[in-house]
Image (tube, rainbow, N blue to C red; front, side, top):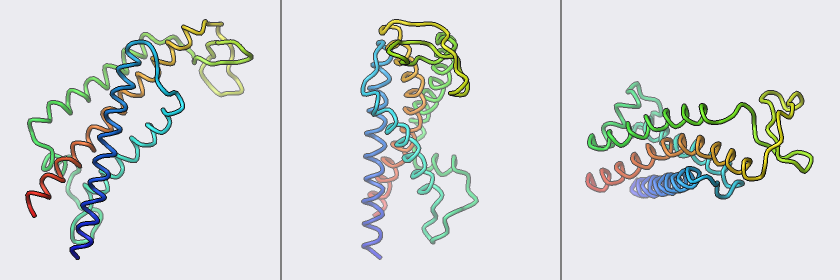
Length: 181
């Protein structure tokens, strides 16, 4: 029984480090995209999958009851509030509001269409199905990089929030578990 508790503690700790790493990475990507350039374009997909994984693992831990039942009738927010200190609810709320405002801002300043590289040219394509996309206009490499940075900024605004909550949950649940032992 003790070994299972240690394994659970170690896994929760690993999830916490993973969430903290994801939050810091998405924060760095977000800040660089605000400056007008994007880092590691191929790495972006891993951040997206990681945010879903971190949040999903947190939900499994939040909904897991020590008696072995996985789904309890308690609301997720109540379980999160019991672990994350109230003084940090302002931080979570701030990131939530920023996520919404950032997305609205990007949708206002971003042109209609998707930046793309086709036929050795940088272009903006109409949105829609891949086989029906039309070239709206040709753009420069600088415009292409700037539009990609705006897309990264939009995504990282969400990722910061969806990494922050698991990071705080795992961090404070570990602190609570250490204090309870």
